[in-house]
Length: 116
Image 1 (tube, rainbow, N blue to C red):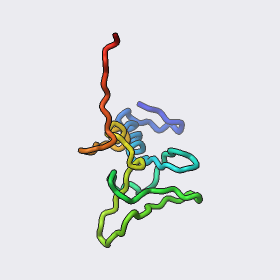
Image 2: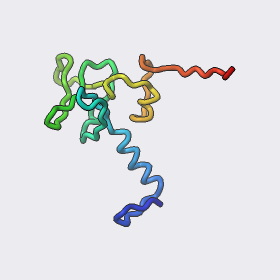
Image 3: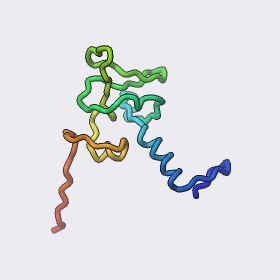
């Protein structure tokens, strides 16, 4: 069991479930002032990831978040935006969000060579 300061007891599985709920919903937003900052934004998981989407998630100076439309949006149209600013490889996507893209231009292949 995992103990908390207020004597609430959790099983290891309950603890891992809670951690995953947070980790899988945290989004990285890139700003000119702060660089990459991670946020847990209520209801943002209503928007799905699409690396090719022209729409962007932005943080404002007064602490608000906006989805900025990169093209005209029609009634009933699903709105997606690129998680992590759209520059994530599948290794990062699977760790942070629990899925992979079938064709990801940011994927890299690691080449291990024997020492000579």
